[in-house]
Length: 328
Ligand code: PSU
Ligand code: MN
Image 1: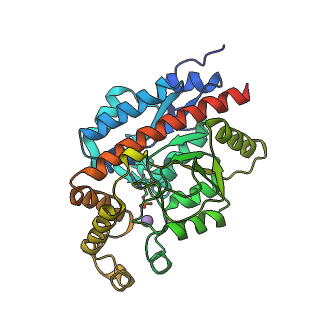
Image 2: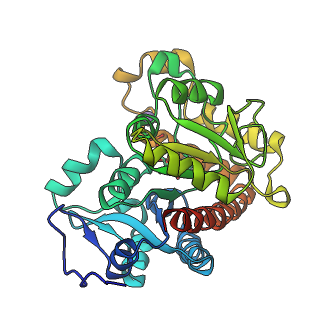
C-alpha cells in the first residue's frame, strides 16, 4: 500500500487535507465527510464538541476515517485534529455560516467558516470523498413559493456527486416542495428501511420516496452506479431517527409554529422582508428556529438531534466501507 506523504498547509487545490484522510483516500479506504455548521450553529457548547467527537469515534469504530470540514483562517480544511475541533466548538457562531455562495469571501478575507451541507459537499467532492454524514439538510422553506428561500443544499445536490446521509428535512421546511425541487434537480432520493421520507425529529412526513434501500450494500451499489455513469448529481439517503429517540410530532410541531410566529414568519411579513431590518430572514432563519425549538421543547429536540446524527454516522460509515469494498 503506498502512502501519500503528509502535507503541510493547503495543496495546489487550495484545500488542506489531514495526513490521515489523505492516506485513506490514496489507498481507496472508507472516508466519511462531516460538516461544521451543525457544530458551530446547530448545537450549544459543550454538547456540540461532545457530539462531534462521538460522531468521529462512531465513524472510526465502523471502519471509516472521519473528515470534518471547515475553513480555518481562510484555508479550507478536510480532516481536523482534536485541537482544531475543540476550537471550532468553542468559537460557535463566531465562525461564519458558510454555504457555497460564501466560500470565496471567507477564503479571500482569511476568515473562519463553518461549512453548511452545500459547502461541505463542494469540498468533499474536490478531494474525492463520495460520502457525507449530517443531521438534516436545508430545503424549500414554508412559503418558499413567495420568498424563494430555497437552501443551496438542494442545488448543490443537483450538481455535486456526493451521497448525503441525513434524517430527512425538518418540518420547519416545506417537505413536499423540497422533494419536488430535488426531483427537478435530478437528485436520487432514497429512504433507508422505510417507504416514507423522514421529517428529522419524527420518522414520518406523509411524503412517499421514489426509492427504498434496505442495506449499506444496496446504498453503496447506487453510489457506485452513479459514479460509473458520471451522472454528476448527488444522492440523498434519508435515515429515520431511531424509534426510541423520535420526539413527539405534536410537541415539535407546536414548538415550530411558536418559533415561526416569533420570527414573524408569515406570508404577509415575508412579502415585505426586504424593507424590514428586524426580521429574521435569509440564512439566519434556520439557526433561529432550531434554537427556539430546542428551548420550547425543554431540550428534548436537542437530544433527538444528537441521537439521529450518531445513527446517521453509523449508517454512513457502513455505506462507506461497502463502497470501498465494491471498488476493490
Ligand atoms: N438543518 C438542521 N440542522 C442544521 C442545518 C440544517 O436540522 O444544522 C444547517 C446545515 O448546515 C444546512 C444549513 O446545510 O443549516 C441550511 O441552511 P439554510 O437553510 O440557510 O440553507
Ligand atoms: Mn435560505
